Length: 198
Picture (spheres, rainbow, N blue to C red):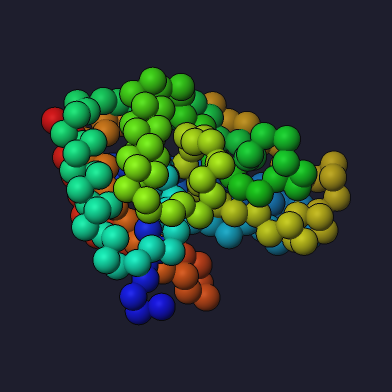
C-alpha cells in the first residue's frame, strides 16, 4: 500500500462556508436526538473535511501523481475564477431509501460541470484508472453520512423532514488534488497540491 495513495480532485470551501454548513448540521442533529430513539443516525463530516468532489480517482500508484498534477495544472490554466451558490440542504441522493447522505445541493453551474467533465476526460486520456468511471458528476457537499441500521430503527413518522433552503455563495479560486486516508474514525483528507484558476 505504500506505493499507492487514494486520490481525488476537489474544490475546497472558504472557512466561513464550512462553519455555516457545520452549524446547519448541528441543528439537524438536534432533530434526530428528539426522536424516541434519542440517537442520531448521522456520522457528520468534520468541518475541515467539507469539500466538493470533482472526480474521485481512488487507489493510485504514486508514480502517476506527476501526471495527475500535470492534468490539474493544464486545466486550471484554462479556467477563470467563478462563483457557486448553495441551494438547500436535504437527503441525498434523490430517491434512495434509506437515504445515504445529508448534503448541500449546488445550483446548476455550466463552468463547474465543464470543469468536472474535462478533468475526467483528461484523466482517462492519461490512462489513469478511476474507481467508478461510469458515475456521473453530481455537484454537492456531503455534510453527513447516514447509518442505515440506525435510520431504520427510527419510526418512519418520526424521521425528520430535511429540506432547508440556504443562500450561500462563494468564489472558486483553485482546484486541489487531495489524498484520502481511511481511518477508523472516518476518512482524513490531505491537500497534496493546489492549482489556481486564472
